[in-house]
Image (cartoon, helix red, strand yellow):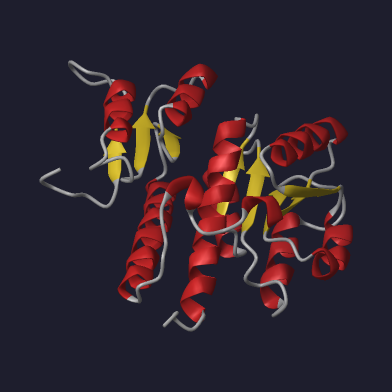
Length: 239
């Protein structure tokens, strides 16, 4: 409470109280509950990742980690903090968390995934969370339909038949009608080259397979929040 940090990076395995309990207490305290917490830990089990999000973390990064990846995640969270402060300076009514100021039930998530079972599961989960979800199985159809669908965010599988997905992302970013839509890559590839290619093509983030649904939703909400805050800043302030 004395430090008043904008972000907390928290290890799970620490002497005394573990990181999960620390996060729970931070989220139970009115003075600290809005501070975003990112776990950085060697614990990579699915159960630990799920637990991390359940106790209130906004992200869960496993060691050994890529410093560029960590820097990008930190930058995204701090961008949200900076945008919120700018809005508050203008006396805009913005709160944190689930009341972030965007209407989740109206947000459209476009999922580009060629595996029918994976696509079906993702569509079901995202719709259950209150979003509108649309599935497409290849890059070419996604490019031809995206201006009609007008999604708020795109989940794009890295391995698809036909057009290279990094080229798909580049085309989305070169089109004035779609360049502002955040693209999150979904991949089973963990090599640094794929992450670099995704970043260079204009991707906002990536989600590793197999999917951890709490992590998928955290990524979606994070990038929708950034987009919404930017739009609010572009609006004229209320008098």
